[in-house]
Structures are given as C-alpha cells and as structure tokens.
Image (cartoon, rainbow over all chains, first blue to last red; front, side):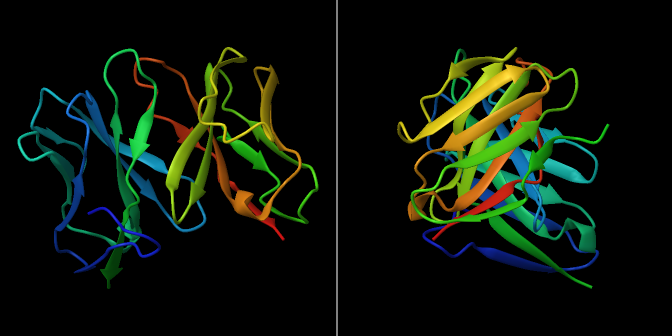
Amino acid sequence: GESVGLHLPTLSVQEGDNSIINCAYSNSASDYFIWYKQESGKGPQFIIDIRSNMDKRQGQRVTVLLNKTVKHLSLQIAATQPGDSAVYFCAEKEGAGSYQLTFGKGTKLSVIP
Amino acid sequence: DAGVIQSPRHEVTEMGQEVTLRCKPISGHDYLFWYRQTMMRGLELLIYFNNNVPIDDSGMPEDRFSAKMPNASFSTLKIQPSEPRDSAVYFCASSPHLETYWEQYFGPGTRLTVT
C-alpha cells in the first residue's frame, strides 16, 4: 500500500508463498497503471503495466489486478523468491496527451528464506 | 548494452557549491528523463527530453536547477547553488518509445548529499 511519511509499509513473506502488494490511486482519469521494482542501491525497474480498460493482466510470475470502482491496484507475485526482495511501487499515468507519472511511495517486500 | 550510465554515483558537497550530474542514455533511445527520489516525496519527474530537446521541465523545482542534452548520448543536470534540501538520489532514465514511455530504463542513480 501507500506509505505515509518516512516509513514504508513492509510485507514479509516466506519463500515459495505468493505475495500481494496493494496500491491506492487517486486519479479516475489515469489511463495506465504501472508497477516498478527497486532493489537496494539500484534504479527502478519496470515490471508490468495495465490499461484502465482492463481489470487483469498477467506476466511472468506476476499478475496485476485493477479495481476502478474503489481505485485500487494490486500486484501479485507467485512463488516468491529471495530475488524478489525489493521496494515495489505503483505509478499512474494521467490521461492521453500527458507524460506525467504519479508515483506511490512504495512497499518493501522482504522474502524469508 | 551497458544500460543507462550515471556519474558520479555519490556526491557530497557544501551548501552553495555547484553540482553537475551526468547521464549517458541507452543508444537509440530518443527519450531521456531526470528524476529525484526522497523518502518524503518519493520519485518525482524533473524534466524530460525528446531527441535532445527539453519537452517538459515543469517538475524542475526552481531556477537553481538546469538540465541540458547537447547530444543524443549525454545529458547533465546542474544545481547552482546547491542547498541541503537538494539532498536526494537523482535518477536518469531513457526510453525508446513515446507510446509506452513508462517502460523506462533507469540508471543506478547519483546520491547527492549537500551539507
């Protein structure tokens, strides 16, 4: 989910379990929603996106769900691995013609071996 | 490809000094973005370029910040004079397509500390 102030929400999962990371967005006019992964000391890395006219999109071991009714986005990671440990944050792209992304503050995922 | 290259990786400077951050985008990528990341504000877009031309600099905090892209393989972000509140990690990213510009490739970042 979204963070407040200096402290990132943390999700701890056992290796092999599934992870679900949540994000609330604010702009009903956003036409794309994106998930990024940021490992310690590195730049963000694009994971997956979903267009606003979809409610589910699957990638390799990841699934993004979009619920426009409650303005909620989630990232599901199947069979979580130690290499998945990172900060995950969502971003929303404003509607057509805009190149601005609004980023959430992130959730820290810790995988317990 | 080596990916997006940024230098320096760490910069410590005193308030009032000029700071120059450098970026080499991935070859062939027409779009270059500069971001600032802090714990309080998260990731913020400062400016982006298309084919070396600045398109949107509305995120640049104030006149102390300036960015240039003299050619397709090099960009700089300059802060003059620097202030302690500029302390952050600055990322450069590049993208090959405008249609899916959010599929960006980020550099490792420059951690700036202004004392």
